[in-house]
Structure formats: structure tokens, C-alpha cells
Image (cartoon, rainbow, N blue to C red; front, top):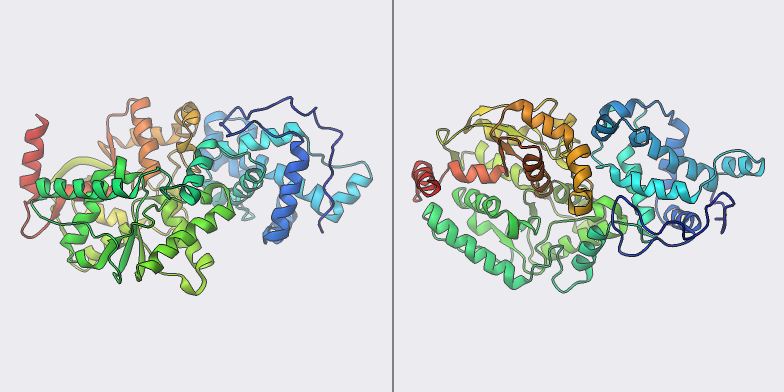
Amino acid sequence: MAIAVPQTVAANKSAGDATRIKFFHTENPLPPNRVARFLEAFAAVLEHTDYKSLLDAYCASATKCTQCAVACHVYQATHDPRDIPCYRANILLETYTRYFTMSGWLSARLGRGFALTEELVDELAELLYRCNVCRRCTLECPLGIDHGLLTRLGRYIFSLIGIVPKALQVSVREQLEGNTGNTSKIPKEAMINTLSFLAEEIQDQLGISLEFPVDQPGREHVFFCAVSDYLLEPDTLMGNAAVLYAAGDWDKWTIGSGNYDGINYGLFYSDWHLERIVKRVLAEAERLQAKNILIGECGHASRAAHDFIPVFGGRNAKPVLNFMEYTYDCLLKGKIRLDPTIVSEKVTYHDPCNIARSGWIVRQPREILKTFVKDFVDMTPAGQRNYCCGGGGGLVSCDETHEFRMEVAGRKKAEQIRETGAQIVVAPCANCKKQLKELVKYHHLPCQVMGLHDLILKAIVIPGAKSPQERKEESDALAV
């Protein structure tokens, strides 16, 4: 039952007392009458989605037992009760019960129960973004409450009243409405020039001549990476290309010039944006008549495509493959070979939450690494129970959260890395790589961070190309 949203709440502080969220930057000052606006947005979400049945179930089962606290890396760093996952979830559930159920309406009539105030609204807005939405706490909840999903719901409601980190809002606007159609504002011409540069680098490093396929129709795979890889992670892209070439699949893939960004920040805060971005990916795959969608090294881009293309694609949905799955399949079939004599450093692996928490991609990258890495060591814990890098949920895109990400959200991951003694941390995710590189610098960790395919690029054996040993000797000579 939806209860009419009140236009004023007596317990509110006067409008205009606060104009900014301290934790993150918003594009505009906070709107007045935030309680009424928040409840109106909440009512709209309930009317147009299926969240009501979920909230009813969670309200009936939530006990605030705080078992989730033992799993939360943020709470472990701060020991602030406000950082316990069920604390922020309870604000949302109490709001739902009070303003959108009959029992809440009756309690209010009797002068009892919960009342939402502007102080609580502002506190909730901050707490929802102190969470990395890593969903580790969900594994510990004895009643199966998905606190990550509730965090997303809260963020979605806030986004409808303009309370969302500016960095995410501006990026999504450019992706959906801007001239470039991607989150990094990379023009098509610049992307194509980058591919030409990468082809030259591959010629120099590997000794093979190739041209990256763009807008080739009817291919098996259309490739989407995090668009930032074109600027920041050339070795990852060259590693992807090397695997495709060595496997004999160079004529089976393409990059689309109409949409070449796999990033989907809607996953972090907005169902509406999530759907629109997913449909743009599908539209490009349809335009190119590709059979599959191949996602590069990006955790959230992979999860957004893998989990939601079947939801929003309907009959037009296409199979989604993460590049590590493709590489693992090539390895099993004997289509590629990796030289086990090249990488002598101790290597560890960081599990991106968006692909590991569900158990989807955990085993494959480890088995790939163990075929050519002599000294592999896992973090503790790892796999589904891994700790977040500290930049998840969109925080790594918000420069104003740097101190929080280094001192609080990323502290547990820094400790894990140090305990392994690893010299190389493999992180197959654009956001994780950015966060971990900042962590390594901030905490003076004696290691380097790279993608899985960066490391594969060093060891892959390609018939007719320079051998991995030749490439290593050339690289070592240049480093002197």
C-alpha cells in the first residue's frame, strides 16, 4: 500500500541548513525539502518497479543482528557503527515501513514509530557512498538480505532528486547524450588512432603486422572494453589482441565505432541508466550483426552485460563472454601457449568483486596464471570471499574520496597485498587497477599492478613472431 507522501515533516531542520554532501561532490547544491523529495522519489520507484515485494520480504526478516559487520572492510577499518551494512539498510527499511505500509501509517497515527528527518536523509546519502557495494556482507547475512542491493536502491532514489556524485553523473551524461557517446569523451577518430598506435607497438614488440578490425559486420565477437583502456591500459589491449591473433581468431572479432565503451555506471546508482546503457551495447552488436558480446578486463562492465543483457535484451539478447573466459577456453583447447620460463616474479591475483562474488569468474584466471607463473600465491581470503580493492561502487571515479579510499576502504586490501609478498598484483579490472595503483603508491607497497593480459603479453608464444625470450631480452635492455 502506498501512503501519501507528506509535504512537510515537523522533525525536519529548516531548509537550507546544508547545501552540500561532505563526502562527495554533487553537480548542484542540495535541494531544499529533501525529506519530501526523497519520499516522492521513493514512491515513484515503488510504483514503476518490483522493489516492493523485495522490501516487504526484507522488512519481515531483518533482525539487525550485525553479523554483516564482520564481513565489511569499511567497518573493520573505522569501527563506526554507522558503517555497519545493516545500519544504513535499516534507515531505508524503516522509511519504507513508515511511509509505504499500513502498519507504518497506523503507528504514525498513534504517535509512535520512525520519522524521517533531513539529518537522516543527508546521513543516508553519505553512508550509501561510503559503501563499495562489494556485497561481501551478503555472504554473511544469515537471512539472505542483500545489503548491496539495498545500497543501490537507496542510491537510485537519491539520483532521482539530483543527489549523486558529480563524477558519475557527468560521465553518464556524456555516454548517453554527449557527442562522443563514452564516459572518457574519447572521439571515434582518437580511438582509431589509438588502435593504429597499438598495431605499431605490436609490430615493434612482437614482430607481427596486423590491423585492428573496426566495424566488420557478421563477426563472432564484438568487443567492448572500459573505454579508459584506450588511454590508460595499452598493454591490456595488446594482450587481448595477442591472444586473438595467436588463437587464429583474428578474423572473428571486431570493434564497433558506434559504441566502444563497455563502462556502465548505471550499475552503481540508477536502474534507468543501467538499462539505457545496456541497450546501447545491444544496439551496436545488432548493427554489426555480431553473434556474441566480448567484454574486456572490467569487473562492473562484465557484470552489467552478463547479468542485465538477458534482462533488458529480451529476444535480442546475445551471449556475453568475459575476455578471461575466452582466453581460458583457448588455453584448454590448445589454441594458445604460454612460456613458463618468462615470469620469475612472485605473482598474486586480486578478485574483482563484480565477477567473483557470485563465483562466476574465480577459477579460470588462476588456472591461466598457474600455467606460466612459477611462483603464484593467493591472497587470504580470496575468490568469492575476497576483499574489495576499496574503489568499488563508483568511488574510484570520485577524486574527492581519495583519502577515504586509501585510509579506510582500501586498507584491508593493502594489508592483503603486503602479506603475500608478491611483486606483481594481477587485477583484471580497469577500476581495480586504478585503485590498486594508488594504494601501492600511498602505502609504499613493493609491487606493481597489471592486468592479466598484460602479463600474458609477456609470455604468449605466437608462431612467426618474436619468441617470449627475445622480447624479454629486448625489454630488459631498454630498461637498463
